[in-house]
Image 1 (cartoon, rainbow, N blue to C red):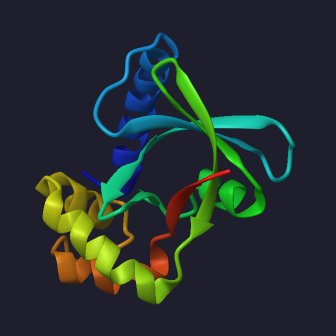
Image 2 (image 1 turned 120 degrees about the vertical axis):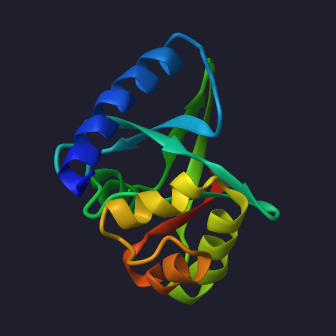
Length: 147
């Protein structure tokens, strides 16, 4: 599957995830990230996996030029919703050098589809932990902190 087909499929699945989450159905690491649009000022909502690694919670960019990444960089706070529970959080972008071990851990501790996703979307060249870590400069990583 090429990157465009994968993105279309993901967009379709994301609509289902948003609908289920808004009805109070929470599953896996998925949450709804609501952030103010940096250009429009309008609230924008995206389904996002919030991953627990070590003592922290992290969000990883899965697509190049993802709008939520640019919006999160511009926002002071975001809202994370899981089922019927919401909380305000700050997303702190992790420096590139600190992303590498987090990316290795994410790929090592997740199903193979996680590493494959970074390759399919063109962010990494190899789906291995080291291959994904080597692409740290292209993959935004945010630490979720209380607001």
